[in-house]
Length: 132
Image (cartoon, rainbow, N blue to C red; front, side):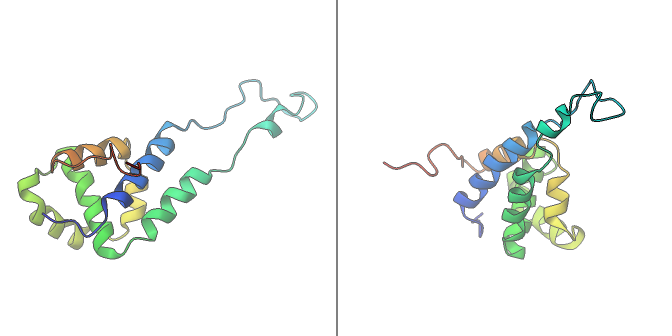
C-alpha cells in the first residue's frame, strides 16, 4: 500500500484532531438569568472554535483520493478492516462516503484511530516534523 496523502499531512491532522478531541465545551455552572446576576463571567469564555475550523479546513484542502485514504486509515485504526484489506476498504469508502471531512469530524477519538491505522502499516508520526 502506497499512500497518496503524505505522512506529514496525516500527522498534522492527527495533531489537530488530538487538540479537537481534548476540547470541552464551555459551561458556566453559575449561569443565571441576567448578566448582572452572573457578574458577566460568561464573556470570559472563548466560544470560538479555531481548532475545529483548522481541522476541517485541513481535511477539505485534501484532494478526493487523499480524503478517501485518510478515512480508510481511520477505518483500519478502528478495526473495521485490517491492513491486508486496504484496497477493499478504500473502494467501499469511495462508493459509500460522500462528505468525508464531515464524517471524520463526527468520529470520536479520531487522532487515536488514525495513529492506530498508521501503525497497522508500520508508520507513525514520531519523527515527522523534526529536524535531524
